[in-house]
Image (cartoon, rainbow, N blue to C red; front, side, top):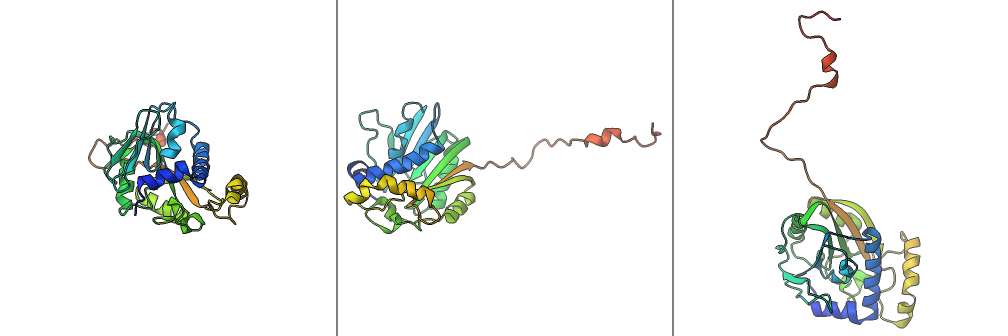
Length: 246
């Protein structure tokens, strides 16, 4: 079930809770990817709130928004880089993307395996993908007051297994959004404090969002071709048949 793009925009840009969530997730992403100079960066789902730091230095930034969700122009005040696309058919050449962020895309897709295949296709050699999903053990997945309360929540093990099945290699994982998903003023004023506490006692207090960075696993080519047999290094020391050892 996809949320409407207008609901997502209102949450992230017009509510204090949404702006706090945007900052918390983006700060964690910036620790993983401090810069993207000269790279092609793409975001799928509703990942555009995370992409603004890369607009200045990236070679290209693309905001992919699935058709069931809808699309909005982004970024405000600059040339539009967002595009409406099919969930499993993106208007990007194979191997073109260096950094891919997926938020509010995987958990709401009815064909997650096909979606991951498309993400694998567009990611280039050495590329990295960051998957942001609701944590099934966190408070945010249990509240429909935020977009993370919709779709299928994940555990780290579940998400890593799904990524490996699609050919990705999970590299690093993070959790964030330890603050309660409440619009009340007290929780908004103490949100930064809860984020700091959560990082310290993460095994006890579950973050509302899981973030897993994965690389593209490329297998060695198989099939017909020229095969070269390399002799063993010590073979040159063995005497040839019919010759006396020196």
